[in-house]
Image (tube, each protein chain N blue to C red):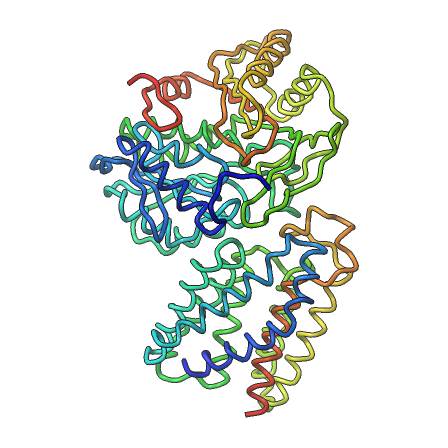
Length: 330
Length: 209
């Protein structure tokens, strides 16, 4: 294992300290329990948005705290759910009286811990559960579809509504709608190593790829031999389209997300290839996002997310945002 | 059941789990991600370390402190599930006025029911619920049938063992082992094994007292 680290025990703390210091104009990092808030208190009457999950997916979620997006984020240990004491401390800090909306990715550890925090909380709160990963079949016999990159889109759009005075119920409803309007699928060329484990999460051959991989390196749909970028892109989009069923001339957001170890050069190449295919299908790309937003440590790979946009979603996607990882309109 | 009782049983459980640590770790490496034994050991250690803080507290407050400790100290799914067990037990009616064996069984059964709800797992899914649910049912039935406490505990030890072994031939539908499909068959669930050991330890300790 080669990593920039001094000790596995201090890995998260030192990274959080660096993040807090580098972005002190935007965020405040709090420790024991760990959570990140905006540098300025929540405006009175504004619904507070709190997300969180295991670390290792940066910039999600800490890098999405700031004006127009989250009010707080709770980072767990690498690939391990945060705990209710973190969410309760964060909620106490950022709840301005209008209630708290938790945005939670669908993994059993995250769901249980956020659920417990919600039960222990005094004030009004709601939760949005993201499960955009189309690689996993949704069935009552499994934990269900995983929450992946569309969580970023949910946080942007709901963040805007909250900033513009949306109520707790309205924010919850919009979050559910964005999640339902989104589908994602990823592919990995290499594995990733959790610092405390010291060895790769899974083995993969030089000429292989895991198709439909999860953001912790969980198995996807199948192990395939490497293919051309256009073929991979087509297969990812076909899987998403089959689930999302965008209509001809429907406007969508095309989000090409890097898993951490794939250069932007390749992410833009995927964007080009995705555009080729979507143009052929007369699906209108009206907004774009390309970059590393929902990562899996140093994993080489990428995911594509499509979100169907209507007027309301477009308006909230375009509104100003000022976080460490996303900034426009300010 | 008193705070003192809880601390002593935790210390006994620690010794038994440590003695069986390599076996549990091996089971988890076969079908999980290998961290179960460390989570269990860390959780027990944290509870024992609470001794000075909780020893003079009413039992409801002590159970609540234990719940918060395992919740934040273990983390992940295990923390949430064990945290739920203790938090629910802490809510038992009138427990600060004394907990006899009937009351102890009642709050344990309520706790197991809450864990079942939290994890959305039932008997037959290759988890610790294959031990906890039958044991809870056996204890409740023993009380209903007015059986002698020693007989009830003896039965609980047997039911726990049977539940633990039953996980061997099950398919996993919850947790990480579920990704393995058929490959998980033939292996005992590590969570079922650690739960069975804990139940055996507590029951035997009461039987021998």
